[in-house]
Length: 69
Image 1: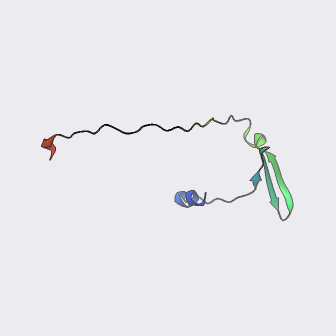
Image 2: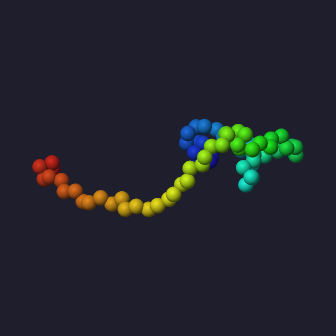
Image 3: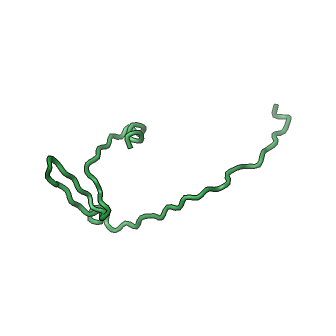
């Protein structure tokens, strides 16, 4: 995150942590000040299914005409 933030010149900070229950918790000086479900923040947004796969990206060798040189 820091590398991307520096590259884009966009500062960021970590404000809390998220649980498996998809709830954001923020503690400040030992007191919980945020306990917010992601659905309350963003609504019921469907998450995309990401599928990684490998593919052959090799191209056939091209012959250039000799007139170009």
